[in-house]
Length: 173
Image (cartoon, rainbow, N blue to C red; front, side, top):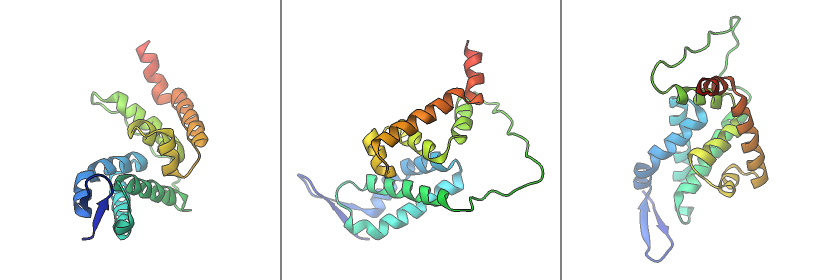
């Protein structure tokens, strides 16, 4: 495999395989939070890493932001496609039963996050789960920092009034 030279005081060589071994778990978590599906998350990560491998010799500096940008951009291109895997049915499926384990709060948040539009979900995941700044999130998504702020505001407003979280707030009172 080709090596990447990271500029700095000491020149270190990072192999692509080493990068994948070290960072794939964190990148897979991000992919899962974006797609909400284990199989799609694995496909998304594999696609992003494949694209990164072909560009590996040109990457300057830390490769993680570059690979994360590929991941987010690939996710965005997937949801822009006309067909998104949904099939029309004559009968509306029954809603999922509530989680019976002790992590009802996470299940409720997960349900509420699933109702957000994909861009808002991506902004929330990058800002609050991945702990990126507004500028870093804007750069990764290819949008302005003002758009990150407005999408964050809209997403949080939707989460505040989401029925899954509203019922949890009433239980706490």
